[in-house]
Image 1: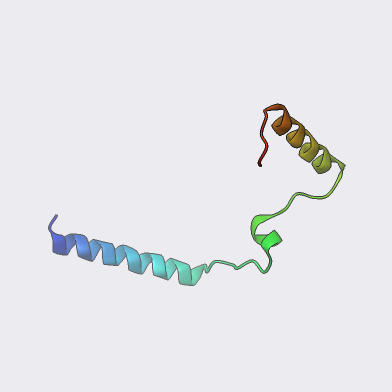
Image 2: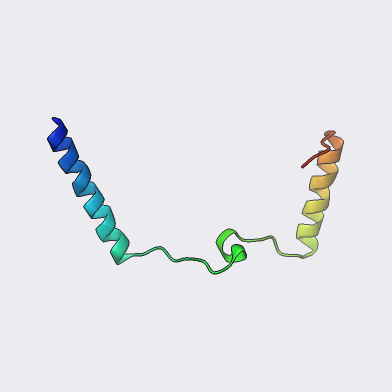
Length: 64
């Protein structure tokens, strides 16, 4: 494959991707929580946080 053929193939792929993006555009999330999520503030998540902190202290980690 020569450089011109590779360049044409690349441009065809770029056009295909752009066409697909127009059909199904990405949906922007409005808030940080929607984009990345957050743990619920309930008993289970609080216990998980406590156990994680206990484990880190047991491992001698001072920064986390």
